[in-house]
Amino acid sequence: MTRRKAKMVLGVIMIAGVSALVGPARGGGPDSASEVVKLWPNGVPDAKGTDPDKDVPTLSVFLPKPGTAKGSGVVVCPGGGYGMLAMEHEGREVAEWLNSLGVAAFVLKYRLAPKYHHPAMLHDVNRAIRVVRHGGSKWGVDPNRIALLGFSAGGHLASTGGTHFDAGKPDAKDPVDRVSSRPDRLILAYPVIAMATPYTHGGSNKNLLGDNPPAELVRSLSNETQVTADTPPTFLAHTNEDAAVPAENSLLFALALRKAKVPLELHIFEKGQHGLGLGTGAKQFKIGPNPAFQAWPKLCETWLKGQGFLTKPAAPAAP
Image (cartoon, rainbow, N blue to C red):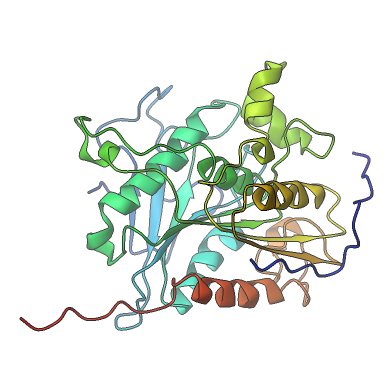
């Protein structure tokens, strides 16, 4: 893919602004998860089979140590080009980092190509937010403090969840479907965003949409075109050297957020390849550590604190 030079100086840019247990997730095992829950315990709508690995989307639940919980939660979408899931360095490791902040984490195993295409993945991420919001009391999560975090293609899925949501159906038979699928915040790390531009990631695009998708469908999932004033406040991190998913993806989303007057924070680091996770590297993908990119989790921690996600809720007043 030919990279185009961004029309701004790139360095570091800061804009202020009830469930059944199942087995390990594809792409890595949620070994330290407290439980793994099915998004649809009674059968997945529009499933093409019953394979627990390929047809059953799940959430691996990671809870902070007792006494440290801040009452907030984050649904994590690992990347993998919509064809696999990097469940270790973009899943479990991220969940454990969030737990260290006192935040409950829910790692999403969503459906993938070639068996599935859009809208299966959107249904999975929308349902994941609903499951956490509806069942929040079980995990000590405030239903009004749920963020959606995604890496690479998982960042596209997270940005889709943040731009293609609904308020729920009050008359739905399933009580989970009665609550909103809108995340309260978005966190996007080197996300695929701009499907209808030269900056898209070809593999993610094909895996999500299949061969020769209608132009309007492509545009509707080029999520910088879907930002509105209702899009959640967003934190973005990318690298200028990312050749697989150019930084223009984050820049275009950030510009759309600014136009819609949605609060955001954007960090573009000069050095670093694609797929860095927390910046500590991933041996299975031959990705080495990147000390500079290791700064983004700390920056995100500061942002989350400012968003009220790291403040322990006050104890109820005595009667």
